Amino acid sequence: MLTSRSEGTRGVAKFIGFEEQSESHGDWTDGGPRPLGFRQTYEATFVKRETTADFDWEAGLVDTVHKDGQSRLALQPGVLDPAAIGLSLRAGLGAGQREWTLSIVDEDEIETQVYRAMGEEPLQTPIGCLVAERVDRIRGPQSTRYTRTWYARDLGWVPVQVAHGKTDGDRMETRLLSLTLDGEAVTDRGACPEN
Image (cartoon, rainbow, N blue to C red; front, top):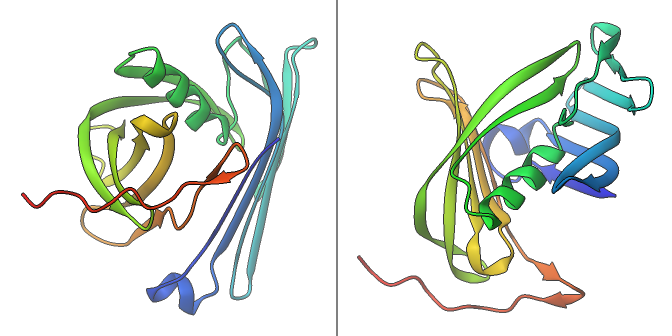
């Protein structure tokens, strides 16, 4: 099972008590993740939203429950839940891929999303300097929204920072605070060199 938990620690996100938790379970088939179940909860002051997806690969269907109701969608091989996007990108980075076109269950539809590796950058984190590959979600030319994720090459492409937002407005960042791999804490790797 893959679990993720984020909470607002600064600014408006902290003020409204933002928390997000997602859980995904599935298996690994043909070199990539195959989701079986997904649950995501967002909470903030006076607001709670939950989305679920249950995959039935034998029947070729995924049943979702979301803020607008329920949906039953036809599945095609390779469809992912939102939590499995990172697993797919990590596997691709490890195999030397630079661009991905993914089919993602998004509440009441299956959406095509495109991601592209943008190059490596040194990234200062609480566990020291990490060489991280920045991967951007590619959106339409009129979109002001962005999603960028940095994956640490020397740590099995683990995601260490995520930035979401609009170029002309609100933004949210998720940053690594600590990391445990294979039961052992990853210790300070030193500071990034000055440019």
